[in-house]
Amino acid sequence: METIALFNQKGGVGKTTGAVNIAAGLVRQGRRVLLVDLDPQANATVSLGIDSNGSEKTTFELLDGKITPADAIRDRGGLSVIPSGLQLAAAELRFSGVPGREILLRDALEPVGDFDYIFIDCPPSLGLLTLNGLAAATGVYIPIATEYLSLQGINQLMETVELVRRRINKGLTVRGVFGTFYDNRKVLNRDVMDRIRERFGATAFNTAIRNNIALAEAPGRGQHIFEYSPASHGAADFADLCNEIISREGA
Ligand code: ADP
Ligand code: MG
Image (cartoon, rainbow, N blue to C red; front, side, top):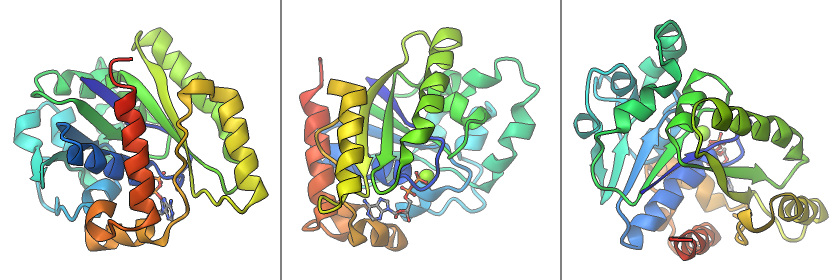
């Protein structure tokens, strides 16, 4: 089992889109996948058409030790999802004085059932929730928007991974990096991809996720890309990315 945190402290780089569609793509390939929504904005939850309003079986209660993963998991067409809700916005405050506050998610996921992959959709910050995501993970996937000079935040991001590795999660490694909002016609986009490959070598995926309107529309329908527009570039790119992930299994 691999537990992968989608991590980049920048917002709008494609973490949630990646988490949802990689998870859905791997389910299509027969993998058992759990998606944990660790963002108080609940974008992944809503993207999949899951209504967690008023629910007391969300990531927050899981972190709080009130429920087990089995209590929280919703089945979304074969994909297991632990939804988030607004109450998670209170997490920093609620848990800041709790001993072991960085490993609440790791502990809570301990009894989780048999999955091939767990994906954790982290919020766009370096706060306590993201730390919990990194502490619970065996690896990190970093989505990087190729449409602007977004490599600036990468040093800080790598320092955070390194700190977490040293202090709370010895095994943590960057397992994948992929470009998003990619447009092959744009020199800047190609340059950013080149720099990603230079910097990350074989850790970088060959597949970049192209800028694709269907990927932006699907969440509004509560559907992942393979449901909303299976013939889109977005679906093709996420299928390719999933094939790369599968080809790395056991490596
Ligand atoms: P993050 O989780 O890092 O904040 P999101 O995955 O929510 O980023 O993406 C930000 C916005 O961009 C969302 O509205 C999403 O639908 C849209 N989006 C993400 N990836 C793409 C893409 N490849 N092409 C077009 N729109 C995208
Ligand atoms: Mg997000």
